[in-house]
Image (cartoon, rainbow, N blue to C red; front, side, top):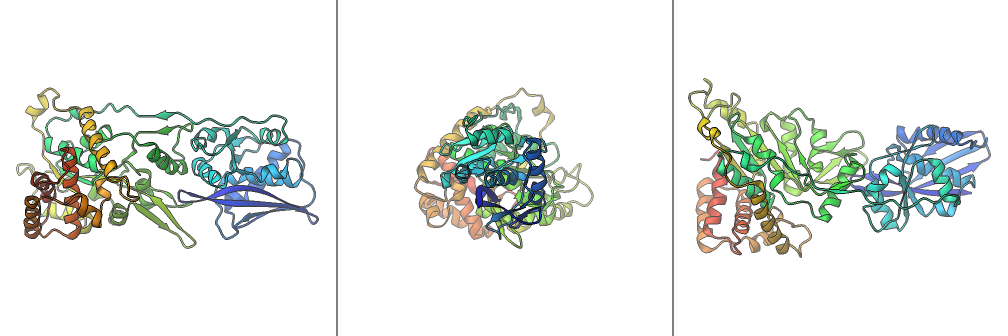
Length: 504
């Protein structure tokens, strides 16, 4: 008899159903696992054997064969331990085979039979819901998986509890979802003295999810401004929170099954590798750009990142999706994030201060910022120079608008965009609008169109740059509460495009 159990294999954020087939047949005693398993899956037989021995269950002196179907799909990870153990126990008639076949299971076994939490419980629950099966997982992963309300999730602490559950001796109760948390931000925009133009650009970027480039001398407040960006962003919607949490689940970043409504804020160091930023490595794990999905990716000292890493950002920034290509598979991860980059104007950092700049000025600035290619720079919607703050300004008390005030305007602008794009599958915010949709929602008035045409002709705006100006102008109009994009909105959007432009 062939006993069946079910689990999942991960391809990006997608969990594909895997059928675990087990047969116990006469022959030389052996325990074989086939179906393209990796090293961790192949070692499952020793963990399963030790866990069963701990419960005084001896394996028969027969040939045990476990097949993971489909056989051409790579199987990676330790979460195959529990489904393999279930299929084997069903083949030995210790637990009902029909009950096991109605369950999707994942979990790692310790040598003592305890179930160790694994990554990916949330995507696995989504797959189980689509198949209309129960999900069985370690108790520590149950709170995370239970967020998928359309599936019954059973969390167990050990293999012994699982056996008693299937035999009816001690049925396990369904798991309950973890807590929903929203991070309280202590960093307030009011702490930033001066830099009113940069604050305005930060507000526009937050309202429309536009990419922002900050350049200024050391200590001018670039990192301080970026650190306060999460405080002006509205919380994640329930759909966005689930979408983002699925990626964080695969990366093992969910704490005690809780889901956060705060938008991700990732700030990798400039020594990070391409796999760390874009994704890849063993198991093609998500990178920083996917972990920042629906949030912010802040890259300080932007020109110091390796050129190959910077250039790989061009396609994900444009499409909102990254494809990690492997010889046997292509893994896709969503990555709709707001890129905020900060840089000094040159290597010494004081190019804009004649009294302090080095002897190589102004060529040092061209060499330093020249590390950022033109096509990549063209993808930044807003480019802002952050001047040094005088000591007199630093002595002044905190003033200006608080993060809460700005967050209110950002939330209202985003609400207007949600209503505008309610009937569109791909567009959520102004940064997503393109083609005919962009022409419809961001068509400027006659004066605004005339101004935009003159600017485009004078500085030689690319088609991408032209469309990005329109998107920013639409966001400024939303912040202004205007249904139509007017000349002042276009003028302000163009002013952020002119900053750092190499043509001017």
